[in-house]
Amino acid sequence: MKNLAGLMKQASQMQKKMEDMQAALEAATIEGSAGAGMVTLTMSGKGELRAIRIDPKIADPDDIEMLQDLIVAAHADAKSKIEAVAAEEMQKATGGLNLPAGLKLPF
Image (cartoon, rainbow, N blue to C red):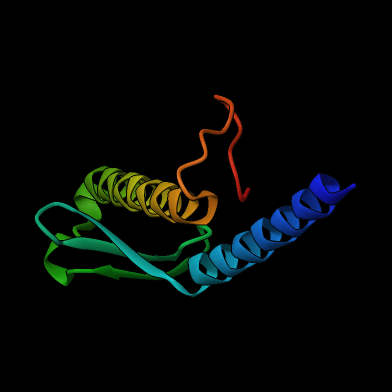
């Protein structure tokens, strides 16, 4: 029973760390950019889009496809940065505990 109490305490501590990590990700601001900074997206650590900045020089009505491609590329850049931050925060929260492959936390 003593081991069970210790295990329950560890689980409770892990849950608190996970909640703290999720709050930190929500508060994080991540930027992704494309086209040498001509298009910049700002996202939360949970992947919510917060802002888009587009340099007016790139907004050519005759070449809207390039602008669309740059927005997609900036999103991909931001998303990869979010995943890196989330992995780092997860490493901190789990204390180096190796989770099973494919288990993606916190979302």
